[in-house]
Figure (tube, rainbow over the protein chains, first blue to last red):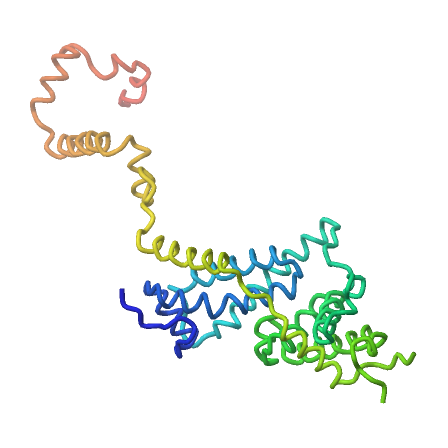
Length: 195
Length: 121
C-alpha cells in the first residue's frame, strides 16, 4: 500500500488529508487521527472535566469527520473550526443532560485535595484555573477556553459558536473578569506577589 | 489580605499554566478512532442494497395494486379485445347473441319498462 503521508509530520493541510481520506487513503486517516484527536480530546476534557466522557465525545466527533469526508467541500470551512463546533455541540448536549439529571460531577476545588501544598506552582495554577472555569456560565467558559487555552482567533471562535465576533469579545471579556474576581483571593497561594 | 483583582499578566500566567496541562489521547482511543475511519471507508465501498421488493415509484405502486405484472397482462389483453370488438363489429357476434338469447327475444323482453321510452308517438 502506498504511504504518501507520514503521520503527523506530514506537511499536508488538514483539508488535503481529509479529501485524501475521502478517496479511501488510509494513511491520510492515520495522519488526521494523530493530528486532530489530541485537540478534540483536549477541548472536550476542558469543557466536560470528565476523562471518560471526553474520550466518548472525541471518538464521536472524529467519527462525524470521517462521515463528512466524501462530501467535504474544499475552501468552505476550516477542518479544525468544523471539528471544534461538533465538539462544542456534543459537550453542550452532555452538560445539559447532567443538569437535567441534577447531578454535579464537577470535582471539589483543588485546594481541598490532600497534598495540594506540595504541588508545583504551575500545577496549582492550572488546577485553580480549571476549577474557576468550571463555575463560569457555559458560553463564557467555551469562549475563554477556545481563546486562551485552545488558541483560536476571535473569528474562528465566532464560527465555532455560531455568533458574531463582537459577541465573542464580550463573552471572553466577561469570562476573564469573572475569573479574575474568583481567583483574586488565591493570588498569594498561586505565587503572585502584591506590588 | 488584599483581594485585589488579578491583572492581565497574572491571568495570562494562569492561562499559560492551563495550556501546559492537556489531556493526551490513549493508544486505545487512537485505535478506536482509526478503526472507525477504516469502517467508514469500508461502508462507503459497499453501497447499501435496495430493500428487496420495495416499490420504486408511482408506476410500480400501481402495478402492485393491480396484482402485479401477470394480472396487468390479462387486463391489457381484455382492453385490446374490447377496442377491436368496438371498431370491427364482427358479424359473427350477432350469431353468438342469437344463439344465446334466441331470435324471439327483443331488448324490451329483458327490460320491459324500456318499452315506454321506445314507443313512438
